Image (cartoon, rainbow, N blue to C red):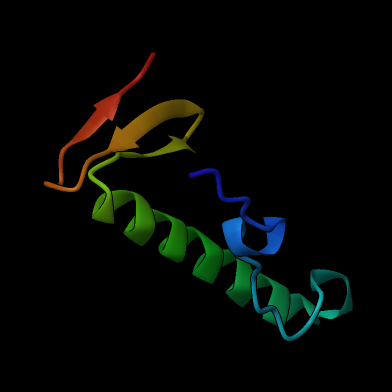
Length: 71
C-alpha cells in the first residue's frame, strides 16, 4: 500500500506569538534564553549532547552532567 503524506503532516510549526524583530531588547534576551533551554531539554530527551561554545571552546554537555571539550 502506498500512502501519500501531506507536507503539513510531516512538519511541525512553531507557535511564536511575536516576531523577534518586533521584540523589545528585554523580550529578545528572555526569548534567546528560552530557546536555548528548550533545545537542551529536547536534545537530552533523545539522549544527545548539547553542543555550545563557552569562552571560545566548543564543548558538549551530556544528559548525565558530563561536559567534554570537543577541540
